[in-house]
Length: 475
Image 1: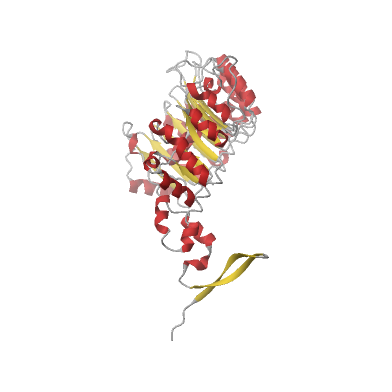
Image 2: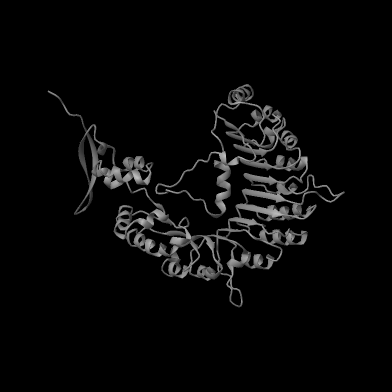
């Protein structure tokens, strides 16, 4: 006589008098005995397209397989679906909260309102729409403006549509002029933002920057890029940083600047931001100057001395062009709270700069440093002797443009001799790439459950690429 193993689970039923939990008996080999919560958690790790096949497994899978889908990325593949099929998908995913539309090409943007209508009618939890405002943006913003919270780009003829996006929090624009109406009076159309990125800042933009700052004191993340041919003068730089220092809620700041010769005023300007924006925790500086400084006016040690005033700085990304001297990195030793440090060196004698930075006392400079990425032209190897002094280091990436003559086995031996005892949990990789073949860098991607084409818009895209552009990590 064989006995069938059974297990008991509680199931809630609706009856008069309130919810009543009734014991249900399931076979030991039945998934139902684990409950819907655990089943939903396990299924949440599956890609979206694989979940349709799981519906056939059991009734419990049917109840839980789509419950964790809260973010949808609409791309051109959705255009080929008929309306009835899209409505079926939307009904299966009633918990969708966010829809990303920015990856749909210009060719299909006119169809976005129709797609959004289907999801809005079937997903009562929909709260956020991420989109671009280009052609026919009124057709999108009139019915869906209150749901638009992130905009990836704005065409000149459609920037007035920003007025309809009352909950807009993240905005990416080409220049500051895109944040103002083109009618007389030039009304600011983007207010109370939390994140802003613009790419064509010039010396003539400070008036618009002042008005923008006044209407967006809530900005927590800012990216300012000077991509124009004209370089910033000392007066323009001082005024620009003075305006930025009024954003006291800043947590993340990215500045890509093209400066004139001997731009020592950068140090004072950065100091103003550091003293007044005391909440700042992430800073990206990309500094570019002319090929050679003026005679008798050295640049060494000047531009980033102000980093000592960034008291709460935890993540720093620094990119320097060949003009800067060897001792420019010295101020980094004062940033004791750093947990992530990324350095891109295009300087002369960058090997010496790295060896001076990673000296015997580097563990005292950065006791909390967990992530270190250094990209340079020439690898000396001496800095490896001091890496074990960083007590919290977990990830180390060297990106060198020249072959240093070490194969994988030799590099592993080098690491084991220098770091085995001190860094048992540390992962390290040495990236050797040909200067003309950098496309070989392996990229890893991760995304939400329904993301078939991962996308990183606006401000977050640059920082994400630094985390993922690496070869395989060796233990």
